[in-house]
Length: 381
Ligand SMILES: *Cc1c(COP(=O)(O)O)cnc(C)c1O
Image 1: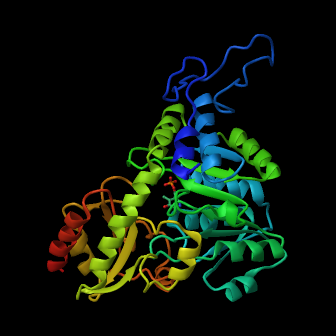
Image 2: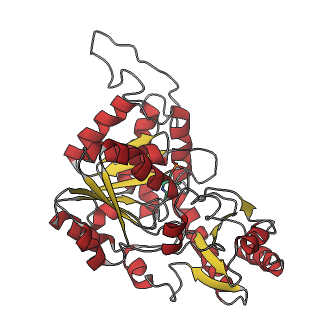
Image 3: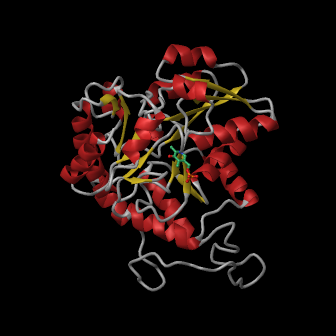
């Protein structure tokens, strides 16, 4: 069966009533026949039927065996850290990391005696040098935010395992419609379902998937112990978003490619970052591990200043200036002053986030209109 068919039919109809849409079980508790005798649900922090439908669904999508839903993408990452690491352990993380993950690792977990090293994981030799006997987790995103760097997931999984560490992949940008890290050897995958999985800019949610029964048992324990769970209503919204994931990702990628090609030839544009362009440094690796190249395009200006970037992001009409990505409506953002503000300037520059870098979340409008919008905005720079 093809992927899109499999996804749609992995969403169960309600066994009780036949409802074709998953019911929203808006309940805190479940009536028991006798102490401990119940229908598999006792308290909604521990388990809820609507959340379970989403958790089972994301496990199928990522070709894993166990899925878990959390209140946000960061709550999902937080749970993985709590599952895998103890004081004295070390994370080797990608240098071009999502700002919120950087803040969590460096400003929260460092307090608890967990060490963090940031490396350029595009360079396997550099990555190999970073391992110590304390390294328990390698953490990557591919493509990264916002410069769309690609890391070779299969090669990194092999390296991590050789050094006795696990590999965690933040698959938010690619989505399971495009890339399945567990199939490439990763041990755990997380998503900010806030982005493409939800797909409509109307919720905050996070997901974790693994195929390891031991990891799954610990994740389940932490999920229940910490209580960072996703609500029944938001679980339902994510399920509804996932129904059209394939369709949306196909169109996001087509539109993004058109936008990237336009920017590449524009005289005021310095660099364009899009893994689907043959000029992208990791195009071949992206081609090997992704089915689509995604909907995010970043670019810098020849006038590499915050002012130039500001005039552009305040001149677009269809691209709305906002954080986040992955929704139906196109968005633009200025990482240096918005999403990546919490990353020290020096580290930001090193990972290619120049002052004029602009990130586009290319939506589902007509590509022609999006290109025209960028063309008029670039005139103002
Ligand atoms: C948004 C995002 C997160 C964090 O997710 P939230 O749902 O906002 O907590 C993590 N990783 C990536 C790549 C993201 O884009």
